[in-house]
Length: 406
Image (tube, rainbow, N blue to C red):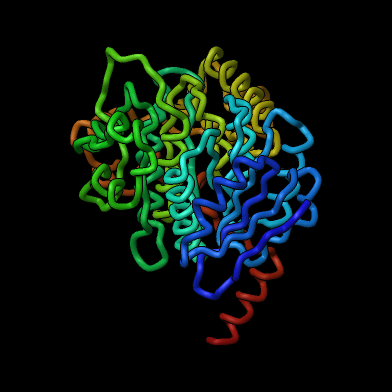
């Protein structure tokens, strides 16, 4: 291993590049070496050999060139990411790439990844974008992400996602909290229809050049509800059957999550190549189902599938929507749900179809039709932190203090 370091001057962009590829090293030196705004530090060697001693303390951005087909190099990258935490942002360059590699890199939370051959212009622009985004977000509060996933068709996922977004919007301590509702059902999404707004997201426009996606372009593709809720939704394309580049979707979601306090995802039932990364990035993951035997069966199967795929990711919680309990009915009861779902059971949302239908037809939240309705009240208990119950001792002390004050 040899290290070549140019002058590191305050105010410059500090780029650290680790590579065992002589041709790539030469390209990097030619690309960055002549720029007076960049202090380049090239470390020659493979990550499995030098990763433990690699210093990134002064780096603005790190570029790691590795062979993704070599398990020992991927393990070394994982150890490096665990050691450095959120700073500096890391760009991975590899010539072996597939969906499994992409999923692994997303789980490690690398800032971006590139596939050889890499053009000098692309490398420079990626480093600049990643460094700028990381600097802008260094002091930003990480958004809270709520994801709603259907276990069966027609479970009412969009209704609950919309109402959750509105509830979070109005949960700020000093007024409204910036909240974005993202409809990830690009083919049959209904969020824009439920809120009576025009969908403005055009993924086809940004897919050829995903690096164009920035805050300014995002603002163009945002729709805004009169309540103050921001919505990202694409026009319905019922006759199209296609999946977008996962890198485009990931860039979009990363950008959204760095610009809002709360983000709510309305997921499609179909599992796409980008679904894992969305679920892994969620703080709360809700699976929505109905109170039927097939509905409970599908919910339990989906819970198991999510746990198997995500490992230590967010724990899925099941919400049973449109719950009705008749005293003299011989059908399913709440105890049956608890027995089937166990600790994954989050609760039930009561049925009020008339209220939901009126809200959808008018394009407004449920509370605008009926303030304090039972659907919103029950949903708040599930998504908002509840005040801790006071112990009998604390209650007694409070009573004593009040009586003393009198």
